[in-house]
Length: 296
Image 1: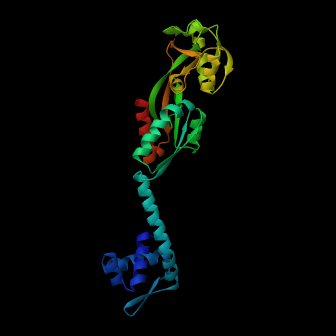
Image 2 (image 1 turned 45 degrees about the horizontal axis):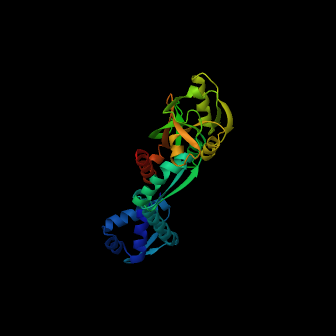
């Protein structure tokens, strides 16, 4: 196997014309140069140098190897510098996938802090709800997935690195003129006869489960993944809804009032990555900033 250190010795011998001169240039001993040249010729399987008096002359194979050595060594140097930049967070790329309410609340502060601390690190962002975002992570289409779950489904993410960020409580949303608009807290059973506006599929399933545990099945008149649309429909008096607190942080509920719903239902917000990716400096730094953003 041809090693980079052997190529450096060959190039020095070719440039200086002798083992002793090459040794002086490289800062090593002449026997060390001779030993490395023997190892290189053994790996190449053919002589690379011919001694002519006090000087060394390259064979045809030696000339070919020297021609390629410069490009190989230059490529290795560039690779070493790039890797050092990535390891030192002077460069790097992170592909982030987030659900919409996370994109509008947690992600902006985290990415702004990351850019301030490590301006050479580039982050791309696309939106996807779990479980699609988790599938993208496992398929290699992203480096970090911002996701959520209700309860703790056993084994769901056992193959991933899970960074817990926060617990996000569901908040009730009713029209301004609703009979419960001024209530401090509302038992979800008091909304049994109301028309409902439901959110994303995972949130929809959770809504049905919570309502059934309280003794009724919600009549879902409208379903949309767009939280502003949910708020708009409630504000227009077309039904009631429960939304995560994060979803309400970035949208002004015009025409609607928020109420605390009992029993309390929370979703767990997490950042997910693969075990190998968790050791990549840019990915680790992004996870840290997401944790700090969630704590604010």
